[in-house]
Length: 347
Image 1: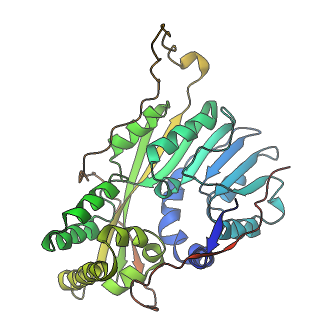
Image 2: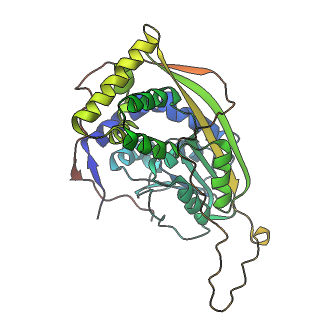
Image 3: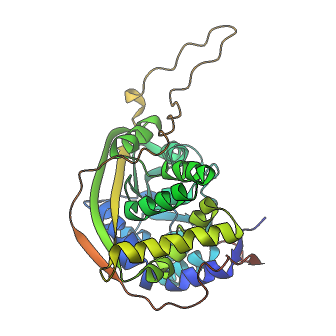
């Protein structure tokens, strides 16, 4: 079955490069691209390629024999990426639609480099996704992924928790705690990479701030409206209860910050690792009669609920978000409505 697209995905694809990429995704992408030098004739996989950044930047650093396979579940985003790639699409870079939550449709030991700029945000189990990244990488190949770290959007989550506590919503607080597990500390991110079987693991981290002129501009900024807002609403509940929770958060933002901008801190992480060469891998456990061998790649334990940690970051970069407010506050998401054309595949 081909993935469907929604009106909201269409809108996101059209505004992403102008309203989200410069202030957010590019911040992470610059970390990913730092000192990146693909090997000759490299085969590269970009997971969650969006509208083509940073894949097209990586392509400019490759020789003529290098190839990139770029995957994303959203057909409208892929359409934008193909248009930007122009004549290179289908020749040196190949875009295809693929879910990021399932097993990747590639064989083991294929790619010299597996990269993902913020793709881990869009999967239910980031640690398992990294196992897949490691599986499809060649021995000696690298895995580089970016993701927001623990404490990101902390100013908002503090107010969210405060409102839920005052309304005696332990069910929603539990959902919020479960949601926050997806933001690892640097140490937890390193553990995810090692549990994926990777070596030479390192996690680089920087911080920057987004400034919103008011609570309404915060909720209607594309980075929020087309990003985590849908999940935040699910955490808060349904119907009037959800509306009431967000109204109180809106009032709290305006009360606490008054005429000052609402500053939201983002802790950007870049996870780097290498798939070990055959001679570097530990020996497989000996299989004995009546027993099952233990996996060399155990799954990591979940972060304790509510553990957001403190990260010593501080580059102090700031972006000011100034967007027109249109539409109805917290308008419900629109349903998927039409199939997209078949994805482009490499010859």
